Image (cartoon, rainbow, N blue to C red; front, side, top):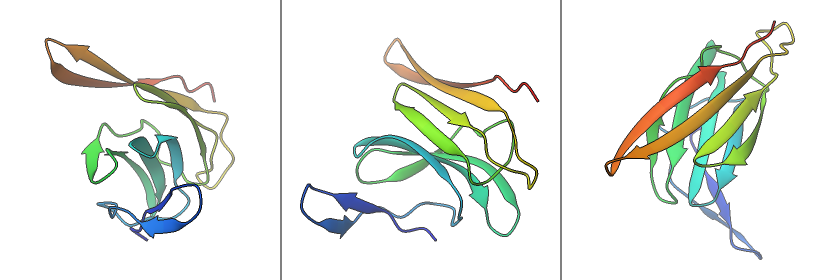
Length: 114
């Protein structure tokens, strides 16, 4: 699915559509600064997309393609943890954004341990 739903405290409304349809994604962030990452459709994905409250844009991919993972944090930093390939993973990856000279620089640091 590519749909996004936004909650305003009392009701849900349609938000911007993901660029790549997939299920079993992880997510982190807030309604106006979010990440959606990984999943499957119909194969494992390592895609990361960033949401600005209106539009999803493709960002740096995870090092490990997987699904059913969890996400935590807010931009400019977030974590993607666990998941399956289909075997369970103990892998964690860190997403960071750096602002240098008003230009956006992205990096994904792989912290996989097994």
